[in-house]
Amino acid sequence: MAQEEVHDAGLALGLSLGGGGGGGGDRSNSSRPARWEAPSLTLSMPDDTTVTATASGGGCGGHSVSSLSVGVKRERLEEAADLGEMVSSTAAAGAEDDDDGSTRKKLRLTKEQSALLEDRFKEHSTLNPKQKVALAKQLNLRPRQVEVWFQNRRARTKLKQTEVDCEFLKRCCETLTEENRRLQRELQELRALKFAPPPPPPTNSSNSGPPSSSPAPPFYMQLPATTLTICPSCERATAAGKVDPDRPKATHHFFNPFTHSAAC
DNA sequence: TGTACTGTCTCACTTACTTCA
DNA sequence: CCTGAAGTAAGTGAGACAGTA
Image 1: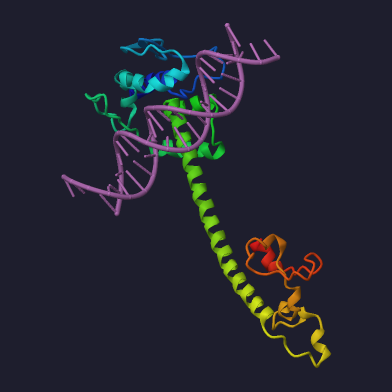
Image 2 (image 1 turned 90 degrees about the horizontal axis):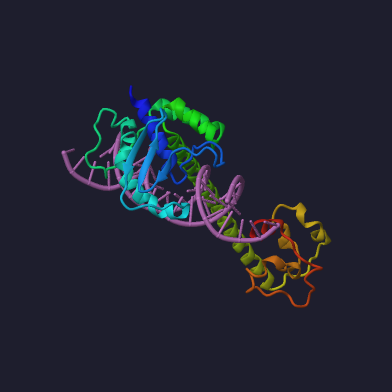
């Protein structure tokens, strides 16, 4: 097909116009390809021919200015650009240039192109200029298109990852909420226990054994109520609860690993 | 050496087009 | 056929960085 020449023509345009225009080799200024020459644009073709488009107005040189005006330039030059760009679209492969320059034709990459791009993306999520040009050549696309594809692909990857992270955080939140509920219930039970009338004195000394040995009731239920204090780091959350003022906090701090783990 | 300028690259956001249910 | 949603190529503006005068 004659598509390749058209692609390459488009390539030069991409180099000269893209905000990230890309592709121009290394970052040095030594080998800059096609450039904007106000008020007319010269597109360098690979075969040393040029396409010149006249743009009325414009005439800005700097990058910062170009950010603002490139869009306008683009619009004005799209007709010239369409010379190459539009025909490269598979959708428009057989079509003539659109009479209305304002409509944006859209390329659909072939399965083979997408597959190769995916493969390369798996290897590296970014491309250096050389790789970009080589890949573009291989795919019969413009470097700008390869660049855009990688850009969009990175964005999609990031979006997916964000969704995954979001799901994970949601589950964490649910887990913590559930644990919080459980701990609130536990706290209520403990408070109820603390303010309940004191039980009769034990008649059997065996009750004072190590609390953790018996599965029911829970071991902390067997601790004297006065030892059940609030973890300092939790104090804020349970400020309504009254800490026994008679006891020094630090010495008899009741540490429940469960409450301390997540709730803190 | 410090500074302004410029070009390039990448990202986030948006637009426009295509495909499909 | 029409329509809305989803997917995606491409446009746009801004920030970061490097090279240069």
